[in-house]
Length: 404
Image (cartoon, rainbow, N blue to C red):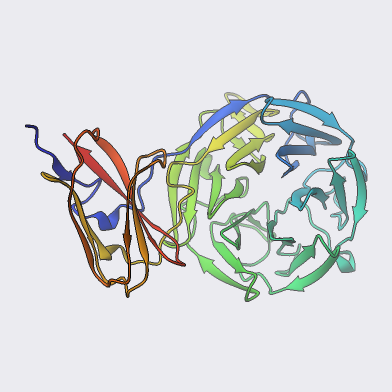
């Protein structure tokens, strides 16, 4: 009879495995049937992606065209032009069933205007402008619930918030990282993030800050490995992602709040593409437009790329201490123990890498619990996930390797 051995990936105990993950991937999709450009904007509404405007020439030539992407058909359709004339450096966001095209510039002057798009009627109207004529261009914000946040203001560290349901702006806590443009911004897990970019008074940056809308406060988080002012960010579930092009990189990193770490997620298979824009549909990120770095120089891009997160990218970190979970596959099957549960109802699941449930156990009111010698006869060798879910808390996910 063959012997099952206890093997845990990267270490002897279960407790260090959460930080490892199956990597994400990029796949090229249908290109926009329009001239390539960069410094454009994008958003997603109702299961469709939208992108438009931007600089079509390396010395200018902004445009006002606007396009809709259907991920099921993998095809683009031109829609009504964005009002206000040709612009570049706009920011896009969505609230409810409407999309927004904000700010930008046609030539030097930064705009404060915001236009709202209704996909149902393919029409635009004008939303409230930032008060006081505050203008932005080449800047990016994030949305949490019904509110869009943008900052820091050009020349200062001020942050502004737009409520899409009331069509009103308010000023929020000052951004602590100093003014910048071409920053990366995303929302994930109910928090907003802004970082990197180019300082208005010089210098490319790698520092990052987290915003908590519940307390209207900012806190510094881990820096990126390299400074960048041409990268693109987006949030999927509880994680933020950055397509990092600083220092000639073309790599994707994931931010895990519970660990305060940026972790490598995937290499980008296409040409390095700077100053792109992005949107998210059904747990997938999309990168569109930008400047491709090719032999002999840069070219304008009309390409679309789809990003699929790694297997653990959609799983939450746990409030449990990972030292409370020990065990793994052994000679007599699977065995593990849980310590210090404080009498809270806990469910334990054994899952495959596709998230399918293989077994489940319930712990009722015990501080310590041990499961001995669960038969794994007939279970193929490979990687499995142990999910520990305490009532009212986020789950702990650990990986186990079953060897033959």
